[in-house]
Image (tube, rainbow, N blue to C red):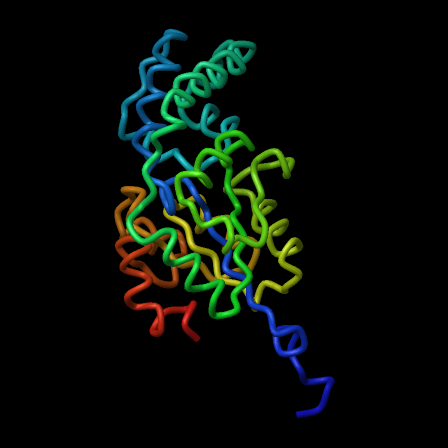
Length: 231
């Protein structure tokens, strides 16, 4: 094969596995749902748990815009986000990793994938989740909401992850658990594998653009050779 037809992946020998973290590798989506509910309740807003749960995965500003009235006093948004952050921080020391999370990351790294965490969470929350996973040796890079101007479903975080990995979109696969992950990947041109560990119904993930769906990281690991991450 001539050099002009050699792909970037062939030239560098690198493929990138990009991962969302909340709900994908760490079982936090329902904790976020409850703590956002309480933070909004304290500010006088009544929002259903189902609506909150389906908004998890968006950046905080987009989540509030989706769930709260347009004519609200937006000067209170910072207080609501701060209350959520404080309530959720109480769980930092006991966040549970999703079954198979660490093993999946280690296996992919061992197979030559460059693993990047691309989380909508701020740096302190991401640090707590990394501690819960316990596979830092397999992680090549990690990005948080502090690294981008606009969070999911905008493609900024996925684009930054590609840049950090040093690969084009065609040589990357993203693993996430929400429709916002799928939307961000669609805009960035990256294949997206969905996990059901975040509690979102498979039909919604498929509609949002998921290429493949698995129960959780352990299920993906069992079927890895037949997945987008095995080819």
